[in-house]
Image (cartoon, rainbow, N blue to C red; front, side):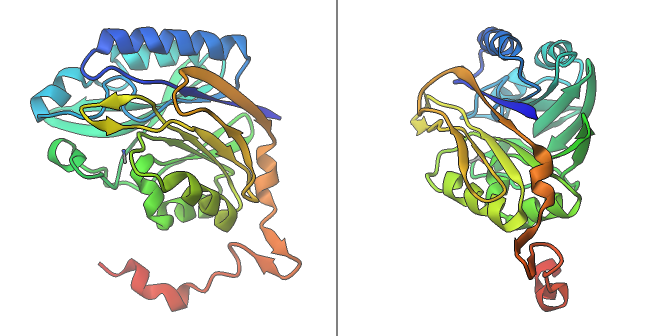
Length: 264
Ligand code: ACM
């Protein structure tokens, strides 16, 4: 079994020091709970509702050298941790998720589908979302608004992901239900770590959740708590893709019928 924890929080916009303090508290809670895989929200080091690119840049950090990343790397001698990070690379800013495990930096995924005003500040990622192996299991990554493109979860399932780790800053009320569908149609666990609080009129509604490959909500947090909650799962449950004795979720696909999906 793997103990999957979600660290739900309310980052303070532009206040990277306060966000490090919140992080320290959550990492401590996760350590005490003996969490094996910890998922933190999108843009956890910076907050979300930037007014200008300069403001976003002031909170951004280089991965993995930045202070938020360094804390995550330290914690990761205890388990795998993924967090959303406002990332700077040269002149560009990315809405990223970085993964650390065994005390080391593993990989960064740069959000491919930018939501609303994010397009004003961030450059979209241009790479397929990654799947990483850890402790004999396979974890796929996507960030928040990627949920509305079912292709993302599907690609991760086709690449063998058993669990999709999904840092989020959700402001629309649809994602939680949609992630139940993403879980069912791909036969995977999904872990959505949302933030809470209100920032410049934007309300983030928490309710972070873990969903099983058959769509059961195994963990649901409240709308406003800052805490680590967890659930024990067996990622190998996601290897059973038979929904009936004759229906395999991936092998029954008919790609020749869907060609239009990959036209530009
Ligand atoms: C979002 O992608 N943060 C809605």
